[in-house]
Image 1 (cartoon, rainbow, N blue to C red):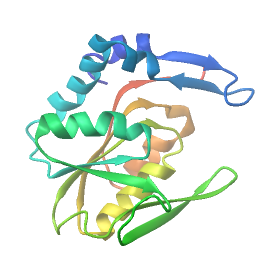
Image 2 (image 1 turned 30 degrees about the vertical axis):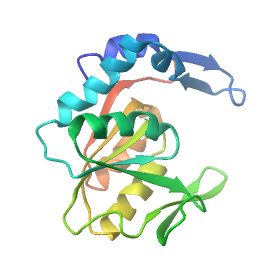
Image 3 (image 1 turned 180 degrees about the horizontal axis):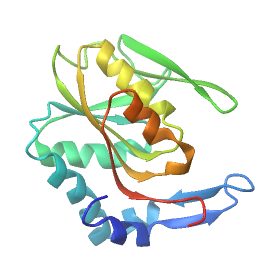
Length: 181
């Protein structure tokens, strides 16, 4: 957790029973609407990664873009979007992963990274870890080295962060939410 983790967590809105009954949706839009909170959020990532000489931020479609682009800008590294299938115009590589009820595919441009590039993977939230692991696999297949995965929110009871660690990747979350919070 970051030095601003408790503050960021206090600004995130919980929406019960959305998008379906029994789900507590963690809404980050209040953080985005509050310039001080958004600055602290971005600073949480920048302070953690400023000495790591990253080559790129690979951010996952779509909410990962919200944090990935400003962090890349502040760190002076490139920004690479990891998109849902069919959204990129050039030659891509893809990775399909399973969801609770089906599968999904993410892609990135085949020329996004050079061999040995140091990459931080970012998204807004880790739940089951499937999307983050798919993105990490794409990066490794394209020659990049995943330095760490980073997110605003970890939902530890869903086990995603542990799956990511078990796959050999570090995990950083600004804050965590348990099911009952």
